[in-house]
Length: 109
Image (cartoon, rainbow, N blue to C red; front, side, top):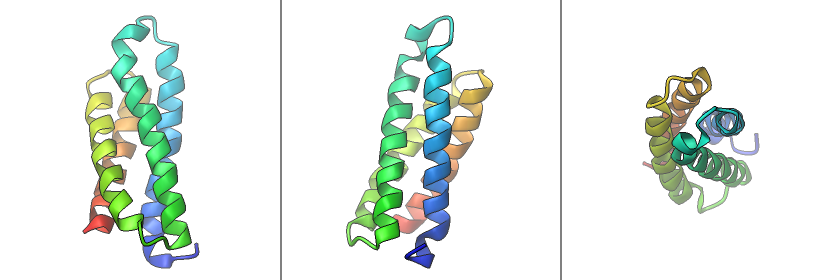
């Protein structure tokens, strides 16, 4: 990594992005997709913000701290939404999101 102090947060962001991508795809296969609409939307948003945050941290951007605050907020929203659903992919996504929210909150502080 270009910036070692960001390493654990970058990993959490990338892990979260992958979990959200998987959850997004799996939710689309659920029998009642409409019930999963908010989950799907947040999965997409969370995945995108996590990848951007990881990229800014890796490059040592001055904006990384500010973006980490936004990322933590979106991850928390996504994690809370996914936790409402019983599907295993949602539960795993929720865990990844909450871990990422914690890491990003620490980075933003």
